[in-house]
Structures are given as structure tokens and as C-alpha cells.
Image 1 (spheres, rainbow, N blue to C red):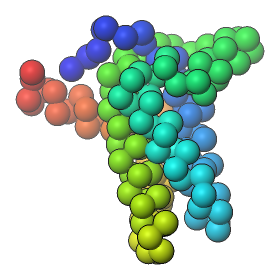
Image 2 (image 1 turned 120 degrees about the vertical axis):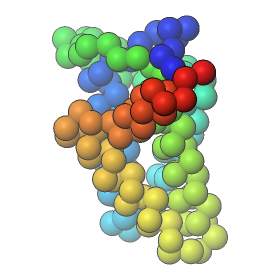
Image 3 (image 1 turned 90 degrees about the vertical axis):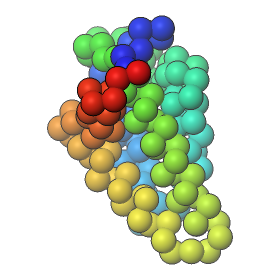
Image 4 (image 1 turned 45 degrees about the vertical axis):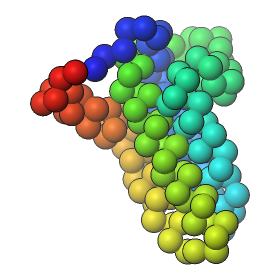
Length: 139
């Protein structure tokens, strides 16, 4: 379901946020996994409250507009769904990490794969799934 009750998201900012997700997960997989809870917090705020409630999103938007890198606008509903998935994956990874289980690398690797698709190729798998779901199961 498209969300028209919240402002659309700048595409370049969404791509940069995906690049940050990719970077944090790669840094985690290289031996410094303590940024995973930060990803969970960012995913929670952007996914459940909206992108414009997230301080990092507002900062990146101001920077992109200041640098004249403002991209097209995208519907926020699908991006919020993607951030809910980010929240779940980063939370699972964080819980597994702090419980001493090496399986935290599985959600981190999945996040690397899907965030790479987003920032490098502009393909948001969660956005596609979001659209696919509402195509067959309209509200």
C-alpha cells in the first residue's frame, strides 16, 4: 500500500543509507561487530516512525540538498517496510552477537547482499516484495 500520509523519500539519501548499512555490516564481519545495534536503532526509527523522524536521515537530506545531489522522490511506504526488515535483521544479529553465538554473521551477510543491491544497482528487494505483496493481497 502506497503511503501518502508521510512525505516521499529522497532516492539519493535512501541509497546513501543503504551504503551505510553495507559499510557497518562489512566492518562488523571484519571483526568489529559493535555497530550492529546502531543499525537496529536506525531501522526502528525510520521503519516505525518515518524517515523524517530519524536524525541521520534529516542530516543526510540536508547534506544532499546542499551539494545539489537531490534525487527523485520515492514513496516512503516501501522504504519504511525495508527499514522494518533492517530493524529485525540487525536486532537478531545483535542478540546473537551478545549471546556469544557466531550465527550473527548470517543476518549481517544477508544485509550486505541486499544493501549492495540497493546502493549499487538501485534495486530494493524489500520494496519489490512490498509491492508484490500488495499487488496480490490489497488492503
